[in-house]
Length: 460
Ligand SMILES: Cc1cc2nc3c(=O)[nH]c(=O)nc-3n(C[C@H](O)[C@H](O)[C@H](O)COP(=O)(O)OP(=O)(O)OC[C@H]3O[C@@H](n4cnc5c(N)ncnc54)[C@H](O)[C@@H]3O)c2cc1C
Image (cartoon, rainbow, N blue to C red; front, side, top):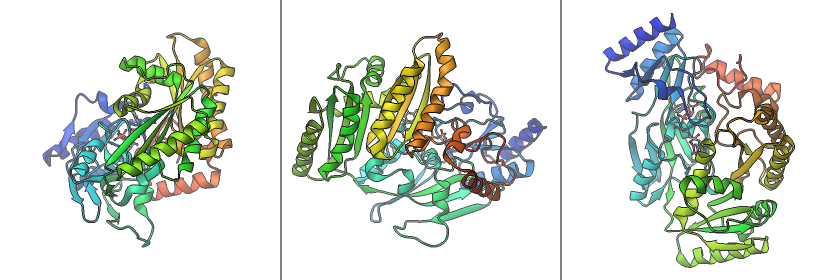
């Protein structure tokens, strides 16, 4: 039945010259979430908002699920079409419509690759500071839908903090517009902020207005080595006392760095350290940047660093960025994207190691220590490991419970998708979860927008 409806939709869309793929759909059934897969019925690649409207009109009419898709780099399974139907890939809506240098805003379509936007802004000495290692493949629409964070969130905030306006198409084809190139705007509900982080469950983002900042002229990275993981985690908090807002404060425990080093065939200094911190300092004056480097270096040494040095940026960031990729190459891993209030971050790292030790599995911690967002990957090194199979589910659950006890969140920047949907009741009481479901039902009463995501199975 659904197949016939999909074929009819595909034929109709093709007659309007809308790009529909029928074959080679395999890649549209996956993202970067472990080995999850579900096949797409058809893949539609619109080039404009009116084309999206037409798809959403037909989907509502025929009761066909729609899964929006960006670059497919998501780590929670959000772009996987768990109920088949239409995968709506925004990859061809990739125009940077405007870089308004005088007001410092960009207006972009959702299919712009993050690093393409960086390059376009940099040409005008401007900057879109959200950055992450998937930046060569992830799309702005995906960043918006997940409220992507990345390493500079510690200074600039996550994607939500950059977005001042959105155009979106709701199920059925209604187009809504909220916000604009406005630093202040208190008219009505901020629907653009509701859409950010909604993971494609409320509508399809077709345009965004985002803030830009002046491009810093100086940027340096300090590498600090510690012989204790706990001291490193505590030191990540101490550096705040320098008074400047640092643009990245990243923690990598040595075992995590070693996985990346092995994959990249490079070696960072301090191979015997227990953990490393990477601190980025940026600014607009050589003297001031130098001054901050010295202050931060002294704070790190006072906080227990064995050594602090100015690091070759590409090499150290290369290793940091490769950690997630390296854990993926192991026989198995289970990634947790936890966040706790900054001061509790050392406790979370220690709890993660305690859980792993007791259960006889391995764990590596790395990530955005400056804002309390630590990626905790349980890893399996042997192909066959019965203990892993038994322990991994309970270990993840225990870690998520510990995160909530520390007043944290089960996901900081990757989103809930399918990976964390069953864990939502750990974080939200019934009334709060119901309030979210009511919004979902009001905007999408037939549950056709990216169904099977965010809420526990069988709801909303
Ligand atoms: C190596 C690596 C490193 C990473 N590092 C980080 C990091 O530091 N910080 C971070 O935040 N993330 C990180 N990620 C995760 C991922 O890159 C982000 O979640 C990114 O924002 C996803 O963008 P995407 O375009 O690939 O989205 P997709 O994976 O295609 O989709 C993600 C979600 O967005 C929805 N969606 C996509 N486009 C739209 C649209 N136009 N309208 C409505 N919904 C839409 C999809 O339905 C899905 O629910 C990393 C991933 C990898 C593989």
